[in-house]
Length: 497
Image 1 (cartoon, helix red, strand yellow):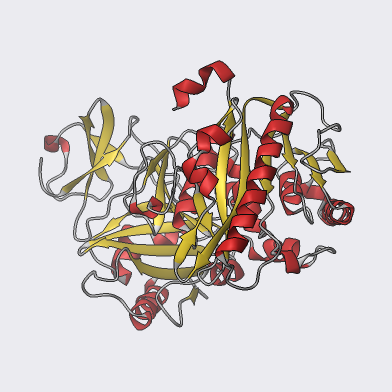
Image 2 (cartoon, helix red, strand yellow):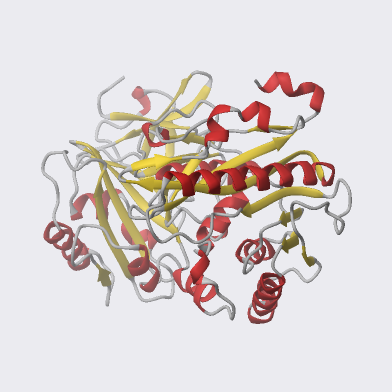
């Protein structure tokens, strides 16, 4: 095969349109090299085959740009890449979206390959750990205005009947890559693009510090609804992935849910809204089913479950917290009525989890999702004695929860819960009962199910212990140790060992 061909994925039909552009661009297929013109037209391609899959070779010229015909997305990972990647995997699993995942660009992003176009904004609205999703358009051998304009057909991507606006960001997979770009370099490329494209009144949104725009800057610029977002990632010395931003987190909506709700309890270390979303996704619970939060606090998990269309059951040992949850969930339903399914139910009650459950139907719960008791609100470095007492109570509460909830959970239901861990002088102390006597501690109908997806072994999961993952700020003393249990048939427990 000639060197001026690049192997690409999946093209069956002659004259297929490219959905990665806002206006369809049709390319022709040549059956062999002899049918290709001597002076290649950029719209001519060579069809071939590899491992029984149809492939495409794009006849390129100076910039070596490949136009991907399969759907390949970059899900940018948040501040905790391991949790973010695992959440993406579990979201696709619980919603039934078929996809393949590739961690080769972690911890920067997770590659997601699908046969069909994703509803990216709807997906990111339900992902707490993914700030941005981009569609990979192709690859370039250089980062230049000419490559972006000519080879990525930038002018074709502008939104019809709207003022032409684009953003440009640059990022490198590793800072050690040679010839790293600066904010000035990125701005220079962006300004050149603005001058050279044939779009009157075009506006460029460019980074002023660093080389990449933040999620907030992209959101405020109207990407992707009102502006074209271009993100270039350098993965090798002469290989740059060119992406079109297709979704960013709605920072305004997150802020409103967090700060405008009428009831808060900052003294107890409130669960972040985004982390509540992640907990729900970790449960792998099917959409539209029923979730129970037995330590509801001010109702963060209950509110996020309502937004995602679940029936919700929530309880707390404190009557005051039950009232707070009702106040916050009522506020959510009244403030955002168009986002709430009125057919879904919310059941709230006071409950000491160490006493028998009486307000839930047997075999009615699809998942338990909760932030458990994290201790008495420690703001100092705990002593060994304090940690031991907290871990003893944690074990007692967790054991009571699993034993109490067993008959109310459906088969294969998940229990996702956070328990306390502690950081003391850069050392992490986790509950010893989870490390030493786990099988003895668990009721017979439960097993621990790893949060790390099967066959995922990237370095970002190095801190996962028995499939459990930690969440906490770098300076936090109290951390959340996130665990997932699965209900199984008692006589099949040996299969999971």
